[in-house]
Image 1: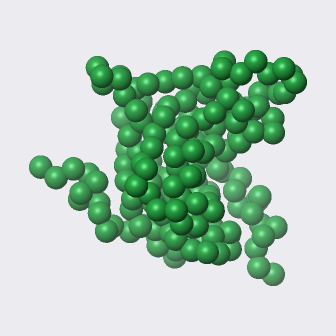
Image 2 (image 1 turned 180 degrees about the horizontal axis):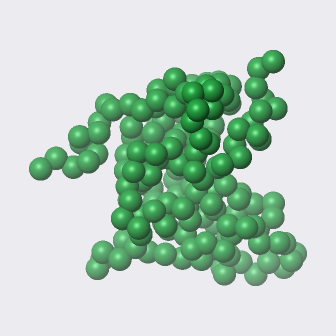
Length: 179
C-alpha cells in the first residue's frame, strides 16, 4: 500500500486562489518504542534577565524535521486534516521548518522570542496526539509577504475563515495590503 506522502505527491491546495504544493505530512520524532518525544524548552533556560514567558512558551513541544526541504522563500501552509491551520511567509523554507517551527529553543519561549513558532509547534503536537494529520504545503515566491496578504484577502472575500492557529492574521497583515 502507498504511503500518504506518495499518494499526495504533486497534489495542490488553494487558499485565496493561491496554489500550494504538498510537501509532507508532519511526523514528530518518536522514541524507539513509538512514543512521541515531548519536551518543555523553557525549563532548559535559567532566565537570568527575568524575561516573561510567552503565552505559548510553556509548551509542551515536539521535534520534527525534513532536511531535504529546499532553501526557498515563499509562503508556508500547515493544514490539519485538510483544513488550513497556519499560514506564514518565510525567507527560507528549510530553516523555517527545521530550525524555527520544528525545534523550539529555550530562548524562543521568552520575550522577545517567537510566539508563533511556539504556538505552531505546540498545536502540531496536540493535533498529532489527537490522531489528526498535519500536512505541510508551500508556495515558492520571492514576494512571499505580498502573496500571503493577497491570498488571505481573497480567501476572506470568498467567506473563508482565518487559519486556525493564527486567527488574527488578517488583522496583523492588513497594514501590508495594497491600497
